[in-house]
Length: 226
Ligand code: SF4
Image 1 (cartoon, rainbow, N blue to C red):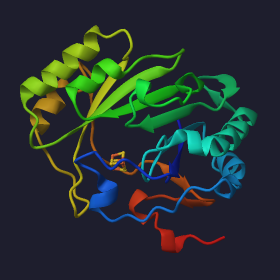
Image 2: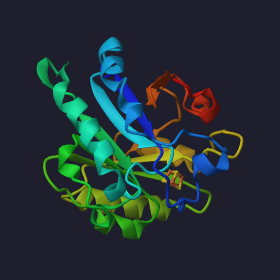
Image 3: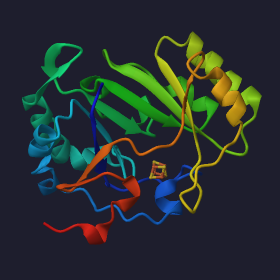
Image 4: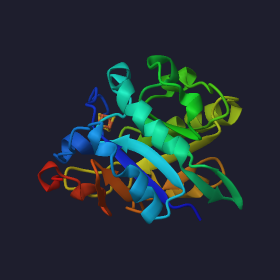
């Protein structure tokens, strides 16, 4: 069973996702700094994490070119850390979560084990490409505007795509941090057949600027101090 460490970044964001829990819930994620990676190696070791996910707080790839130094340090830590997965010793894998499609950033996606593209329209699917050997997943947040036809169009595109391996749907979180239930019966029906239906839960350990948290919504700027 994998144990994730979810590294929460805040490099800013385009704020275009209609369902953004970061803006809607007024979360105050600290800005990402290079010094904020200082404890990452120890936290990985102490908690026996065998996979890292990168997400936000904002989009981890927002203005990527301005944050290359942060990524250099991040990957130098990752490249030093070997873990056991599936009975083999290997470099700890990195899972990138972004809403930039492959052609919208110069980030080397092939350095990741898995890339999870957060898409919000059918049209974006054709901008998702595999760049190396990474597993490619696309996730959609279902809103009140989605129909069963929309879900099926997306599922069929992914089924026929040689660039996208996995599809998942999840529900919107409202302004009170409550999960919604749009098309839920239908989404449950297709779970593990045409897609994964992810029911919201905090199952990760979160790392943000040298601190660890067990709940995403508790990551707040005022709690941060070295
Ligand atoms: S990428 Fe994340 S932080 Fe940015 S608008 Fe979308 S949901 Fe909000």
